[in-house]
Structure formats: C-alpha cells, structure tokens
Length: 342
Ligand code: ASP
Image (cartoon, rainbow, N blue to C red; front, side, top):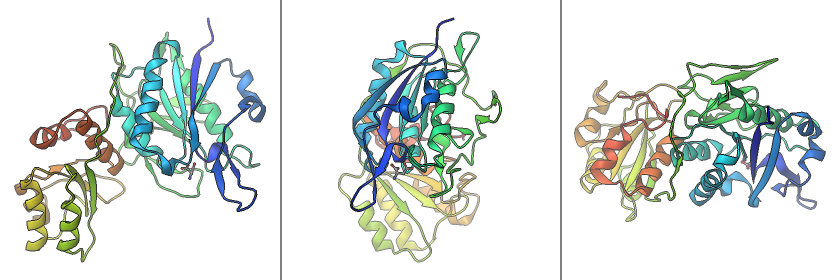
C-alpha cells in the first residue's frame, strides 16, 4: 500500500515562533527544517509536503482573505493529498476553522487545524504532540476512505468539529472545547473516533468558494447597555448583518429605546442573529418574555451557533451575494454541522 500523503500548510502561530532578541516578545518566523525540530516526522510513514503560507503571522492578524487563500490552496492540491494539516495560531483558530468549513463545500477529506501554546523549540512544548497526531489523523483511512471528512481542530489529545470550537483558555494546553458538540476523537494509546459525532461521508466534488463579505458586526449585550451605543454600532453604513450576543437562552433588555433601535435595524434590512453569551446551550427565542420582542421584529435564532461560526457563516453567505430576507432564512439552515436544526 502506498504511503498516505498529507499537505502541511503553515500560516504561523506560536508553534513556529521565536523570541525577539531585544524585546523578548514572541513573533512568527519561517518554520524551516521542520524534520530537524521534529525528527519523528521521518518515521511516521506519511509523505509530507509543507507549504508556507506567505509571511508567517500571529493569528491575530488573520483576515478573511487569508481564509480564502488557505481554502484555495486546499482546492488546488485536493486530488494530490489524502489530508491537510493547517498550522495556525490558537487565538483565532476557531474563526478560521469555521470559515474553512463553509468555504470548502462538499469536503470529504480531513482538514485538521492545530498549533500550540508553546513554540516547538520550547522544552515543554505541546506543539510536537499536536503536530504529530494532527498528521496521523489527516492520514487516517479505513477501507480506503478517509475517517474524518470535515474541518476539525486537534489540540491536546482531542479532535473537535472546527465550526463548533471555541478557544476557552489562554494558558492551558487544553485550550479548546466544543461545548455543543461531542469530541470527534480522543488520542490516547489509540486514536478513538466517535463515528456518531463525525459528519457522514460525502460523495461528489469539492467546491471551493471564494470571497467573504465584510458587512458584519457584533453587538454584545450587558446590563446597562445604552440604546445610543447600540444605535451607533448599527448605524454603520456598510453593515448588512450583526450577531447579537444575548443573555442565557437568547434574552435581552425589554426597555423601549433599546428595542426600538433593534427594530429600526431590522426594518433597514440588517439581519440580526441571536447567539447566547453562555459557553454552551442554545437560544430559544420566545421562551421568556425578554426575548419575545426579538421574535416579533424578525431577529433570527442562531440556535446553538458559536459566535465564531455565526460571524463567519454571515460573512460566507454575504460573500455569496445572499442578503436581507434570504440571508435571514439561510442562517437558520445548517450548512455543515455548525448548528442544530430549528
Ligand atoms: N498569539 C498566538 C497566535 O494566535 C497564540 C498561539 O499561537 O497560540 O498566533
């Protein structure tokens, strides 16, 4: 049997960072001679090719154009490789994973994002295990078919659905969770996949979409938020849609000024999507009196979407030229496992 082929796309992030000689601040550098830093790569039985993605960056500098570029690299090399690993900073990894899940329609091969909390060069690095296991998952096949056929994040012994992932810790090696979806696989002495949690395998060609819209905002509620402040946010001329981060199961203040501002935005055709500020659980608009008005004015329930998935799904659909009422309808329909159906 021939060796599985994996393409490693290096975008930057802590995994490849070194400390600046003067300031000591970590900065992304080219990850040259990866095999010298991780000699185990040569013994994996995987044919690995690495592409460095432009100038390596800290993921705080990630931009939707980068997501489109990563998707197009995967699209261009799709037939050559069994799987793809994207090395990426952890800070915005959940956004990139969500965006890629939408941009890579009909994906049936693994696209595994990973990175680390400590650079590969650090003695206690978590990067080595993350890198090696992500490659193993990207190369894994059963009966000639890939086991994972979706965009996923691998971090600290767990594989998560990409568009369900959130970064939950700034320091711990266990930096990610997917509170509303089971872990796809756990890596111990064996890698144990949860078949019932993985997306069913898809047939048909990959369709790589290009272009993300940028008319998206986020309004995060807090007790005492001023209607004028929300008004200012929603008055942005370029705004086509906004994620409304609400309390609990989708609730918000009931004062008239605040509701009038939201209603005005809905009337101007701005699509508002309700997601909860809670780490887990779903929005149930209308369950409490404090969300009834949102239903009446046409705020879309984001169900159990993460904020990251809601923002990138809006950008994706806007990039497809979908706006207004059609955007509101399409936001309620799951695209690739990112949300429960209504
Ligand atoms: N600031 C880094 C980044 O997101 C953190 C990391 O890689 O974990 O690029």
